[in-house]
Amino acid sequence: GGAIFIANNATATIENCVFANNGGVGGLTCQYGGAIEDEGNQSPTIRNCTFFGNVGTFGGAIEIVSSGTTSIIDCVMWGNDSAGPEFYNNGKTVYFAGNTIKNGIAQFTQPSGTPSNGGSNDALDPLFFNASDPDGADNLFGTADDGLTPLPPSPAMDGGVGALAFDIVGRPRNAGGG
Figure (cartoon, rainbow, N blue to C red):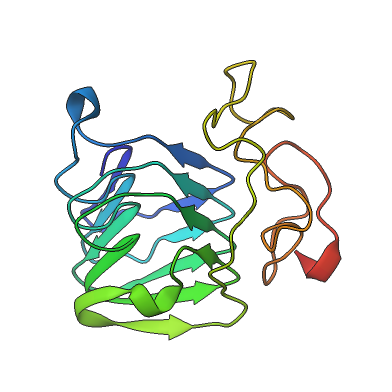
């Protein structure tokens, strides 16, 4: 992956992260997942993360291969680029719940593996504040001016299925339990 490679039975919980504009060296397409490659017999959880503008040959945002279960919960995957979909699976069970995914989980590419729909997934535009400037005017992720902050009435705001109590910039999340 352009940002994270999970392998060799590693334990990984990835929470409250923004993966923006990742790919290969020098901005070239990453051969595998644009942001994350999950390869091996582990069961990582990816929760409350935003994936935008990543480029990968297999999965613009994430490539998942091998065995185990990967959980993707309360994430936004939008505007990633690949020869295929936002994510790619070859062999794992992937549990999706509370996500906003461009083209929905129906566009899930999987030579093998099983998608598990935990509900509350949608394919509605997250209505980002300014997607052309992901880190905002201050050039720091995790601050109030982030361009990838969803604006009302975004389906990604205060949604989810058990989201964290606070969003990535520290604002309370309250509606819909997320």
